[in-house]
Image 1: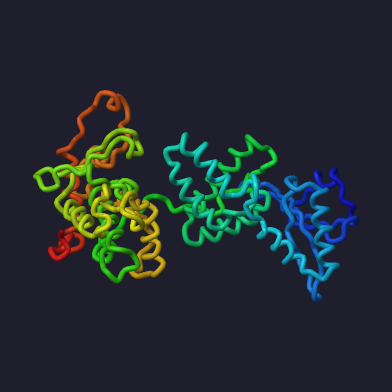
Image 2 (image 1 turned 90 degrees about the vertical axis):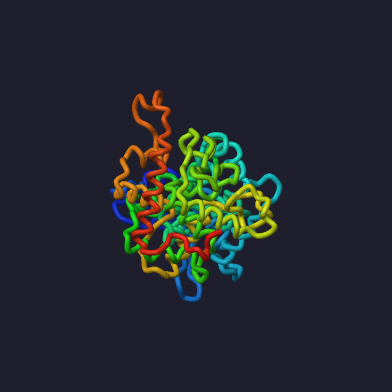
Length: 420
């Protein structure tokens, strides 16, 4: 066995996974994992090996070079003392990690996430709420932990568990956590990104080309608002409105009463301000008769304490001063899929928007009209000079979508008993 030195560890390489023990420090070893063709670079991981009750056990201490030889040696010696004194080294290491609570100015995951959102994400990113949401999920797992105690294995296990249910959420979480660490590293070079150089742990995401078939629509449409489904009727109505309007889930969940115009007239519409759009331009969406009836139905379902809310879909918590999160719809769909009520292939709320525009095209609506309805960017000189908003054509499109749904399902889109 070699005697570990800084020079020896720095030059240690392998073409297969190996584990080398130190001749000087009892129990200390370093595991070397070679790189892969998928872009994962080689890793060197410190570990402590010991025998207890006749079995060999291993504790991961940290990554090299983030943890130096001197630090690894000190940690291994500490674990050897535990073993000599009759304590379980693994249990002691876990206890020390879990004992990391907020004290003084020590940087915890919660504190770092707060700073990242306030100082970086909010001022610079339109999608900062996505960062806030995925980091909010991570807070439930790591919130009070010191950043110094969080290792690569903690995040890898967390993200892989998340990927079992949602590949996209796992990859988004990994991206936000990486960005957060890279941001704080500019200020404090001792805080190293533990996920650096790793490929997407969630794996390859589903290609965004999912369009619901007529058979799926026929099963899904009535199920969205049935009482015995694993989602609320309000969530089901919001999901239906994605199909009926062709708009993004975030815009649907944030729908405000003051954005709705002429609901009882001949030309009802939904006027969205620029700050609510992905492309920072105002957007007017004509509403079909069916969309209007669904909006009125949603308003009628608001509890008494939320009657003064400015939102069509207020958060169930509180008195209606906040709209429901768009992620509430993703969670509703996930519950529906997890329970396998309908036996459908994987789909997401955003697939409703893609399906709606596809159905409009199938009903003879021109592509430029569906592009206008979905508020996609105008290419070329039209970006500057074409100010015609195609309101008449967009109304034809939403009416065509409603007609397509009616034909595919073979039933009225909204039964009279459920109309507001």
